[in-house]
Length: 431
Image (cartoon, rainbow, N blue to C red):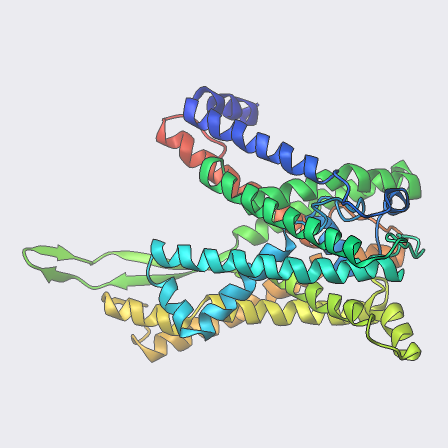
């Protein structure tokens, strides 16, 4: 009842109601594009992919596109090129001095980085769509039952160019829709679209579980899903608070400082990024199958790296997730910069000398709390593989990237609506 009353309060506020309705309208446009067939694709053969698609990388793209890849719609690539380009730009900001300077210029620098992220998104969309077109024709696109499907039986250069152009334009349109939500709607546009894609797949995956295992297994998996959601919420909110004390200082006739605060170090500092990185790395061997002519090597890739129930896949995927968790955390949180800023403004951690010792202390704490976070992310990411190997379930709604993103976006959007309502003295979601 509290949730319903909060939504009613939100719709009573004219500007907030306008933002919510605008967000719903953009989501409807996004879902419509996920069902518009790509010109040049054999739609009748694409229907054979209705029950799913094999391959971890392709399943990730299909997840972020809301099933548009299985329908070969114009939004088949989904938001993946934009996510990849955003991650690349974030990594390059640490390496390239010019990008680092832009990141410190405030709003003007942010606009420049955003513009280059858009350019890189288009380039990646062209490359990924070209790779998918060749996979569509080569028979490497397989159903959930591992049956090859040729989606472009009438192969020609103009047809290939049309498909690549359509898929690239679809990605550019998704990027624009996401930015519209961010500017005029509620929440982060890209996150909302990803959330919509994931939620839209739940009924289909639930139906597949009912057909494969029956009502008893369906209820069991729903209970497991609730437990996983509770665990993720607990882990997402988990943090280690490092107390920071600021010394008193006099500037002119005013006294500043003398207060105590804390630095919140999250247990899951990297979020869902390590899973995306790991799945992208495992997607590379699938793309290389077009140029590899060694049959023994192809068979090994198909039986191990492309097979989610393989123990080799599980071990490699889990290790990659743990590695990228530490890697991304090290990039996004720099203990040296934090220690220098604290020293600059007269802050210090009680019992720790400012400067180098503070940086070493923060790095040591972050390394320790990242390990349980990395192991937890790896365990969540491997849930679908475990169910495939032990239960024979090809579609798991509560596993890996999907549930992490769903919970994270829900919490963040609720907090934004909460802050909007609190500004107008309405009761929000959280109390």
